[in-house]
Image (cartoon, rainbow, N blue to C red; front, side, top):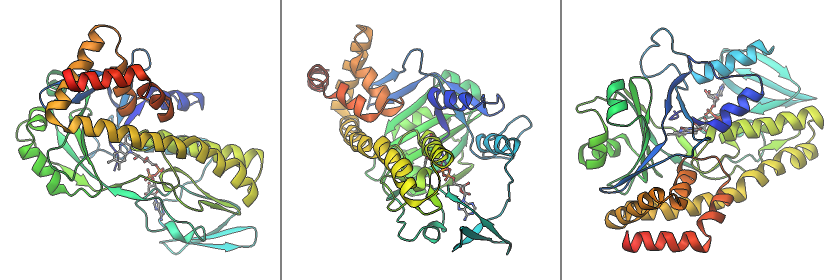
Length: 370
Ligand SMILES: Cc1cc2nc3c(=O)[nH]c(=O)nc-3n(C[C@H](O)[C@H](O)[C@H](O)COP(=O)(O)OP(=O)(O)OC[C@H]3O[C@@H](n4cnc5c(N)ncnc54)[C@H](O)[C@@H]3O)c2cc1C
């Protein structure tokens, strides 16, 4: 339920916690992003900090072949080594009791806890049980498919890059191809995308056709939701909600956002406590400051670049200009494209660069004259 691309920044944050990424988890180290227009494409990468790792969140599309390990398993193993107890059961109820919560599982067990963390994402039915008044964030309904692809194809045809492709139809706003080890993850992002929208793109979108192995069959697909808003009331006395179920960066770095909201919560609980005012001041407000205002700029930037990239002739003129800029070593537009689609800089910093008079001039010149 995730394309599994993670940037250098998150890997560094994990390393700082004493968790260097296990080699068995890394499915590929991709050589940047390639952003496509109609007939032109541009490779964007940020030298030095541009490393992109791709991972499987679960066991992968087929049963694990020997050495493969999922990213989530890697994290779970680390928590167990750190002393956590793992109950492999679905939580079905959470009831407030004196000094904490009573949690009931699908197997009929119930246990009492002093503090609850809701890290259940946006694809769960449990959401409203935990915190009275909690309203999950608004979501989009995306599609994701796994396809087999030889590593030679990934190297020779895809240049070992993640590809962002404009969609033909209106339902999908962006298509992304994320290379793994002998597999590709194909993602369609939009407000309500169905598998038949993706299949139609596979048949009719000439750019996509050229980037997928001929006759490759979809091995499996899913319809995960992606948050595009902020939850309401994600905390109360002795309970807090982290990750997608609360707030994350607009259409990017979702795993890193979950890391960040979790770390802010852990800091709050350890340093200040678990009361409602403490959670509001130190957890909720810190997360909101980090993400909500920034996401306003994220939406604006995505909107602008989507509008440009989906307009065939304009997108080609723009991308030709970006290629020429990069060759001339200025590369402002290439840097902005990298930042919007891949980088981990805050959106407000990218917006500052994108809306500087020189960038606006370059963008307009590239669109109009290529
Ligand atoms: C199509 C798509 C592609 C994406 N690609 C990327 C990407 O390339 N890189 C990136 O950084 N982010 C990506 N994301 C975003 C990323 O997947 C999320 O931001 C991230 O997984 C959120 O983590 P989380 O822990 O909040 O929730 P999740 O990862 O959704 O985890 C929630 C967990 O809670 C469990 N759970 C739910 N309900 C219960 C219950 N009642 N009892 C017990 N367990 C329960 C679930 O089984 C699950 O394991 C993508 C998202 C989508 C939709």
